[in-house]
Length: 366
Picture 1 (tube, rainbow, N blue to C red):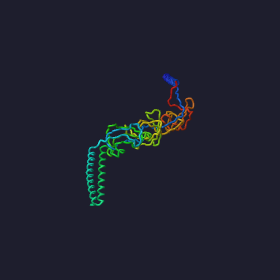
Picture 2: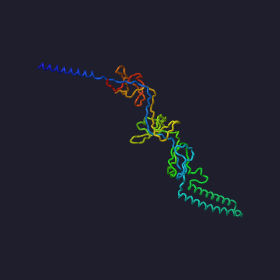
Picture 3: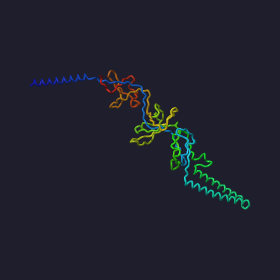
Picture 4: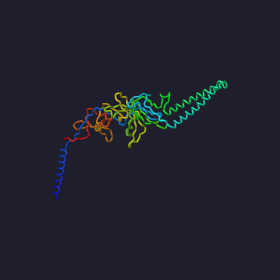
């Protein structure tokens, strides 16, 4: 019995020893883990937020008529430069029948009053010649007659204005002649000859004859998401890229951030505006789509590493990297970080340019 137990124990010892030797052999036969390294480099790091929008004039003036009618002539087209007071278009008045009738009745009434005052003046003149009335009565009759002539002439002019939009002596300031109110470029003329237009008044916006703007003063108008609006502030620099103009970046300054957001497609968007710095060599057309990079922070020619090389302590949450001290041997180095663009991060202290930083993706040696 004792002999059998001894044999079993010896067999177990042999099996355990053999398994251990096999495990050690397998471990020794595995390829060793190899870590690559990268050295820090000099980088210009820019932290930015992106907004989409378009290029628009700083001030765009819509020219509208003060009288309703039909476009008879157009003297400008989009792209023309005009000065304040230049003639843009001419309107042919389509008279309102009710107003025209009232003006005609006013002429008839003024003519009746004129004839009456003329007869009175002639009668007073005869009586004065015979010495029946004093001179003051004649003078009063003269004044009434002159006023009646003036009223008759004014009634005729009102009739002409209602019928044609102008009258003799007022052709230079006629409402039918549409003139530019500011100097600049004509962006568009949305009407054509023969189109009917409506006057601008208290109750009606009126028909736009032309849009004029100073194209030397352009702005970027766009929108940023609510996740970005807390990072930006006024007076930050902008870098504007226009889709239609390749390989050009236009500088601008952020002037305006909307205090209230608007919901669009399930997200809250905030409007922003930035004034472009004048560039005489490139003409930017109004309405072109553009993207704006809002420069939140910038670090030029600083020591940097890829963000993927940086680890964070589980307890202190402080950043660190591992620097090679010998072949496949590394030492932890705490680092102070600066500006990051999502790919590279500035290293203010902790390592130098000659250090070899451990890449955390381990590779099996072939």
